[in-house]
Length: 313
Image (cartoon, rainbow, N blue to C red):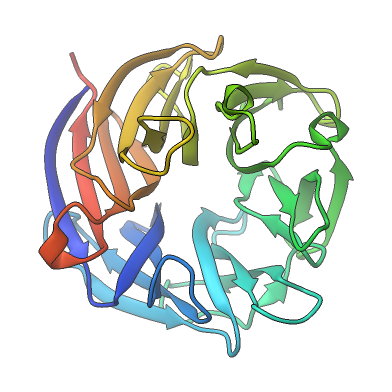
């Protein structure tokens, strides 16, 4: 795994962060949040697109919601070939602190009105499509607590059940991959008071996804992204890596090979530091594209970056 290049895409807001990317109808789309700082009363989602990641990027759309901080934008492509944007609308007052919402687009420029896609105070952090349904994990906010497995249809209707093995813990961000037989694989973030219980987990479950087996990957992570590797025999995982499990800094953005036995292998640290990470990944043959945010260039603020990697030996 070799880092070929890294380019700054965007730094027009005071704080640009929490990224994802997807290829849709031949174009590459990048989404992220713009705000005044890491957490603020208002945040909007910016959409950029390009026919060639090495050339010109277009400012394609800006999505806002009155009275809300839109956080952690995630992209997916529906079975009927629409681009789906997922984000949690955070509010600083009222009984509902977070409401996960979805927008849909046929061209990446014009977006539908938002629709609620989870229970109130369930932060559905990411959705992954498998056959005709999208699946993901939501964690409870505003005192709700718990971790919930969601299945969402193309009509936006959802069903959920609670994973009770995590009651009493704080587990939150995740990503999913699916085997052809429907087995789900999940990379999960933990943030418990005991650092020994704050390392990431790799889990798997067969339908209906109520009985899970979890294995410790041995390091603390944030903002996980998980995709299949070139041979579909293991994974490529990207995440925020903490040098000290009990400390916020130092941190950096890392991409690693991850086996089904939860063993981290070959890894690359992207050019990053400070407040950073929350990557998105796209694998096309042996070429890996990663989007992430970082504040390592102090004179550029917190900016969005795009990295290109070659997976060939």
